[in-house]
Image (cartoon, rainbow, N blue to C red; front, side, top):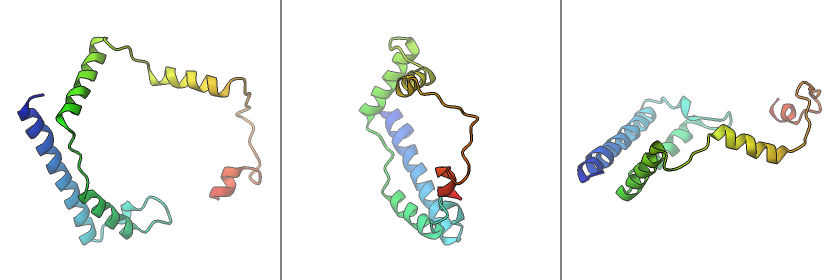
Length: 123
């Protein structure tokens, strides 16, 4: 990655993207368009939008050039076969087997609603 690629391709473009996101949140605040900012029923959409706006002003998504070069090198090593990779499903299944071991579960058995903890918490 040369100087031009880093400063123009990464720093400059990331800066403009951050400005765009900040302006969009500011426009949502000014236009009372903040319904989509609440994730939970208990959340106040206006407060969430205000918090996202002020937090986003402090965000910096620009990474150091050395980090990006190291990341690019790691990707090239994976593509060339220099580094052995494992599929996430293979790793997760091995971990799951070790974790669960010999536990037997009948997935067709349903708990009555009064015994189902999930049902009780979210009804």
